[in-house]
Length: 611
Image 1 (cartoon, rainbow, N blue to C red):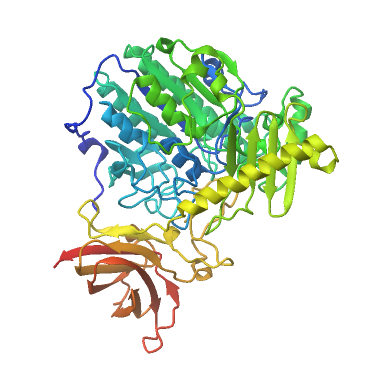
Image 2: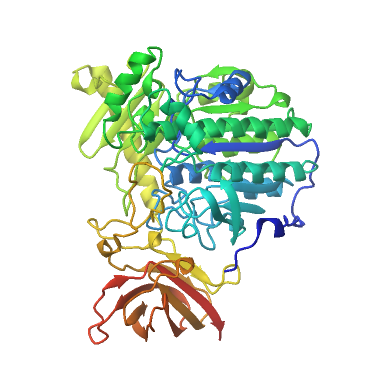
C-alpha cells in the first residue's frame, strides 16, 4: 500500500441514501471524547490535586455529571456497548484479542442510526472493534475514519514502526503519514472535521489511545510531573492526561468560534478504570504513600478499590460529563445508576433520531439529565463482567449492581458490598449471617445466572475476516487475530517499537518471536478463484529478511509451499481457493520434507486475482 501525504489527501464528501431523513440545522451536533485507561481518580476534580487538568475541571463545573456511571473493565467491550446500546456480550465483544473484539455487522451502531437522521459521522483515534472488513469503522456507519490499528498505537495491527510520534495512521483504510504526537493528530483531524461540517449536523467520535500504555507524551508534559517528585512512568501517564486536557480546550474553543457551542452535545468519558498500577522499581502503593505525604488532600483512585480489568468499582466506575446548553440539562451531579449502553438510546432520543433496536439493553437518560431524576430508572440493575478468555464463562469475574448493592462473583467466590456505607468495598457482607443480606445476595445471584443463560442461548460467535470482497483487497492479516491460541502461549498483540526514552519495558514480542507458534486465522472467502498469498515474518513495511529457505501455507486441508530467495522478506504462493469459511495458517521452514515450523508468519496478505 502506498502511503499518502497528509497534504495530498482531501476529505471526501458523501451522498446520503434516499432513505435518510432530511438533515436539519436545528439538530444538535454530537462530540464524544473518550479516553483510554483513565480512571475516575486520574482527573483533577475527583480529589486529585497532583494532576493538572484545569480545562476538564472547568468542563465538569459547567456540565451535568453522572457520578454513578459504569462501563466494562476493558476497552473493546466498552466500545461495543457504547456504539450498540447492548451489553458487550450481547454485542459479541468480550476480549481485546483473539478475534473476540470484532463488532459484527448485524448490530446497528450509533453512527449508522445517526446517518439515518441526516448526520455526518466521523471517528478519530482508536476503534479496536475490528481491523478488517466487515468490522472496520467505515463498514459500520462512519463516513470518515482516521485511526490507528488495533487497541493502541504500535500494536500488531497498527502500521509497522509507530511509536505515537510522527507515525503512519489509516484514513478510511489507506495509510497516511502524520507529523507530531498522536493525541494532537486526533484532535487536529476532529477540529478540521467539525469546522468543515458546521452546516450539517455531525457526530465526531474522538476515541483516544491515551493514556493507554506505553505511557508516552511530549517531554515537557512528563517533566512537569517529574519535578513534582513522580516516578517517570507515573509522570508520563499524568503527562498524557494533561496533554489531553489542553486539546479538549482547543476543541471546545473551536466549537465556540464556529457558533456551535449551544447546539452541541459535548460528552467526555473514559473506557474503563485506571491502568496506573505498579510498574517497576518501587511499587505503586509505596509511590502513592510518598505522594500522599506531599499532597495530603489527594485521594488515590478517587477512593475506589480496583483498577482496569477488575469488577470492583475502580475498574468500571468512570467519569461522565455532558454539556449541552440547548438541552436544558439539570446540571450538577446525578448519582443514578447508569451505564455505557445508555448512551445510544439517550443520544437518539435527544436528537430525534430513529428508535434503537428492540434488543438494546440501555435506556434513554434524557429525562434523568433534564430533571435530575427518573422514576423509571429506580431499582434497575447493571451487570459488568471481565471475560478475557477464548469462550465466555459464567465463572469469570462479574458484578451485579442494583441501588447501593454490589454483588461480585468469581469462580466459587462470592461477595456483597454496600457502597453507601463501604465505598472502598472492604467489608464482604456475606461473611455475616444476616438473613436479609443473604436474601439480597440470592436475588442478585439469580439475576446473574439468568442473565448469562439468556446470552449463552443467543450464542457467542466466532468472527471470520472476509476475503475476496472489493471493500478490502488485498486483505492484511496480523497475528493478534490468531485463533485457537493455547492457554500457555502468549498472544502477539504489541510489537514493541520504542523511542529512546527511559520508560518501563512494556510487554512486547519484537525480539521474542521464537515464543510463538503459528496458529490459524479464520477467514470467509467470498469469491472462489485464484488468490495471491504473501507471508511475512514481520510486516511488509519492515522488509525484514525471513532467513529461511521455504514458507508453508495451509488453507483448509491443503498445504502449499514456496521457496524464499536470498534476503527476501516474504514468500508468495498462488492458490485456487473455494468460497466459504475456512482456516489459513502460515510459517517458515528450512526443511521442506518435514515442513517443520521454525518461524511463524506474523502477517499474511491475501489478494484476489479473479476467477
